[in-house]
Length: 108
Image 1 (spheres, rainbow, N blue to C red):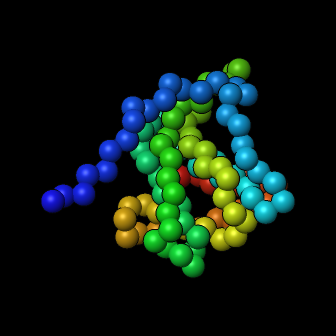
Image 2: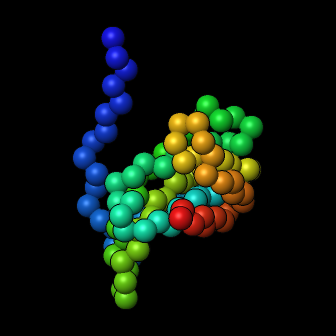
């Protein structure tokens, strides 16, 4: 039997002020900025010392007052060091999540 990984349809693009972040003393959030051609791409992050404990989100357009950006938002994440994954086995880079803050990462 094959393990099938399915997802609900992607949500509509978000607008300014429509994303709520769950951050606090020991939790933060990550925004991964990408190019438009990455729309729908699922990007995974994991604690650096626990590479198998991954979470992911899909890149979506975010309509702001003066432009549209493409990014994903992961919240909440426990403060610490994280690996951003290019694919199942290849790290893309690392980042630090700080409690009460939003960390921005640029996927290029």
